[in-house]
Length: 173
Image 1 (cartoon, one colour):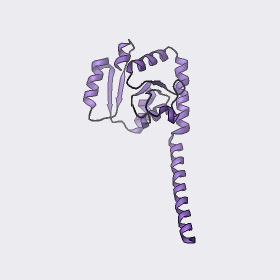
Image 2 (cartoon, rainbow, N blue to C red):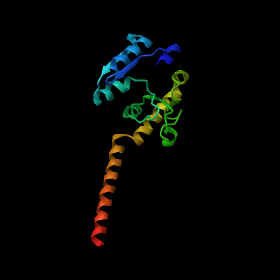
Image 3 (cartoon, rainbow, N blue to C red):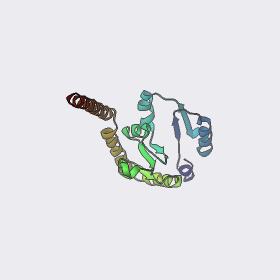
Image 4 (spheres, rainbow, N blue to C red):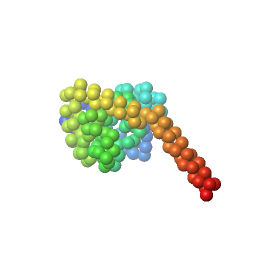
């Protein structure tokens, strides 16, 4: 946020959620972009996230060193929010998030690169729209509620089947 703001880009930060660092985070963000540019929503239920929050967010920034799979990233992608993510450990191995295809990636610990990548992307709205749409398609195909429920059901069926097979083998033996 500091790097983006310093680059001259107008930034509004919307914080949804709550935690023990809330006051410190709001204070730091207010110092960086101005209190008038920080909106704190507090804990937000899923309905409000889907109806009011995601549809009004342009970019979700995830800065983890180790993963980008928090549910918030997948939910944001399902709502065509541009995902700006660090190049976390395992990103390439997973193969889910592709830089310039369904998200924008920056090196871990390099917020100035994140800001520069986002500022450059803003010059190409058609490209950003394509990245958002591909992100939505990927999320719908891989992490939507239906896909996750189907995968869970398949795992449970497999587990029950193995247990049944083991019992049959024990009875036959």
